[in-house]
Image (cartoon, rainbow, N blue to C red; front, side):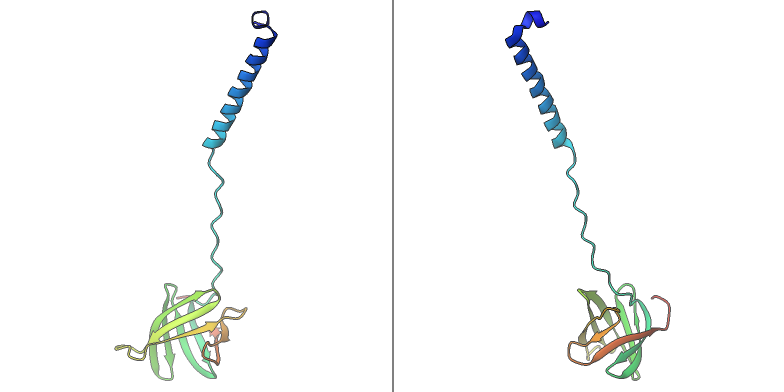
Length: 136
């Protein structure tokens, strides 16, 4: 075949083969899936699910933080019910006294390194001091 094509023909043939190879590699690269970005992990939330002895500005009570976000607290003879979340290191609780819920309040705690204590947004201190029951 070399005698048929001559020197110029061999050069064109080599260039054509190179172009086909590059086109094939380019198509293969386009067909390959793009690397997936790893999903950002949410920051770990503190291990607060369960029933706890609660210290609030020197007073003591019992509270339960349910895994699905429910909140219950017995505080000086009153039973409070609500919801809780932790976001960016801040525990937020919205609670009321059933059945009418007229005394609905929202409070926040900036959690310390333990994830179970810290200053209240309105002043004072909050702590889940000891786990009393299983994870709720």
